[in-house]
Image (tube, rainbow, N blue to C red):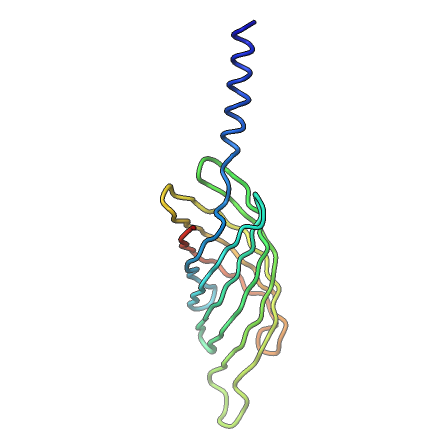
Length: 161
């Protein structure tokens, strides 16, 4: 009987200890990638709960016939997969300002657009304060130049504090 009580106590204690991994309060870094060119984004993540966070990005993109400055905001849910691996999903949106190449001289070569975005990815939380992630972000544009769906895939490297 004593062994059974000891075993149950150890198992309950271990289950509380193993579920104690939390996401970092803050993470700052870069998100690199894009679906039709190259894009770089300064990314900031802020924990707002045990398994929830906000992600903000200020980015630049360069495509075949445009360049863009973008501001993005996402709400994310984070789930522990195994050990230091997490996966996450989120929703959000943003604002973009485009400079369009190849238009006739004298025409308006700028445009602005809003976009809605989803986000799904996997991340590895190293024992040092480094977080590496790979995510897929479909974006639905609302504007004259960007009125379609863009499938953005990117690698993220962030310092956690």
